[in-house]
Length: 369
Image: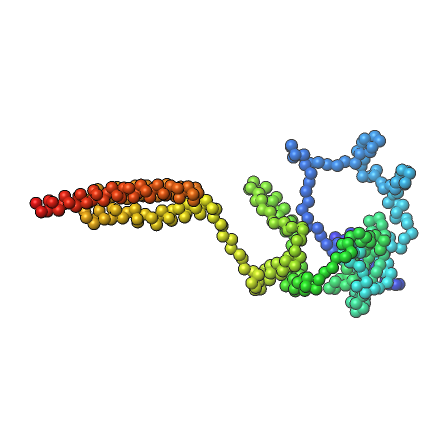
């Protein structure tokens, strides 16, 4: 690891030469700004607002602007000459239990490495003293132009340091909490406890940055000229209508995701479509016409038994009348049409009976002859 600061840890009269290294790294994808029309890089140049000329880094210094607009230059030499013991030293101020540190104060994390062979023994001494006491050390140090607060603790066999915000940098949560008068019932707390127990312990090693992976896939697809898949996850609703129902659903979902039995609540209800009145009327009309069809075919059956071939025509007419009955949009219209149809069928049947009798007489006359 590359060190970002060299100095020493002051432990009473014991001085421990150390190197400071970043304990974390950023995996975020960095983008560059380009000109959309030609792809040229966008660059920022430091230009003096008086002569509008670019200023090199060697001629750029810090400055403090007063309330009245007065600008006071401050060089690196001015800052280095400050009589601060923390300029190159991590000054241990005392020791407290780790629980005494508010997590809101935690900032950047660093590793402290012994700088040189002579520093190994006092380094190990401080490490073991911290380990045995179960406490953390509170120290002050200077880094990047300002004095900071730090916390030293043991991580495996290494002394780690967390940057701490000063107490006056922590804002009070005024106006953040919900308004007074909100009451939580015991039943709701029981469901919340059940949900917490079902979710179980969080395994931080299994968590990863889904957004970064999605961005990497997007960049890879665009580089290969492939179409970008547009898949959007369902966004949860922000407004909770029924807290108890939401908790119960969450418990069931958590049990299912953990492979546990979801109970009767896990059953999925089936939705059946309901037919319209118009389609129902058409089905009934079709059913009634199909039931009446045998009565219309009664005359042809009598003729078929006597061997008369010309009596199949009424069956075709009755079959032709079925679609007309099925297309009826309303029950009243269908009923109105059925009445004339029945009368017509009755007349045809009456006309066919004398013809059948005449045919029978003719047949008997031929037989006797």
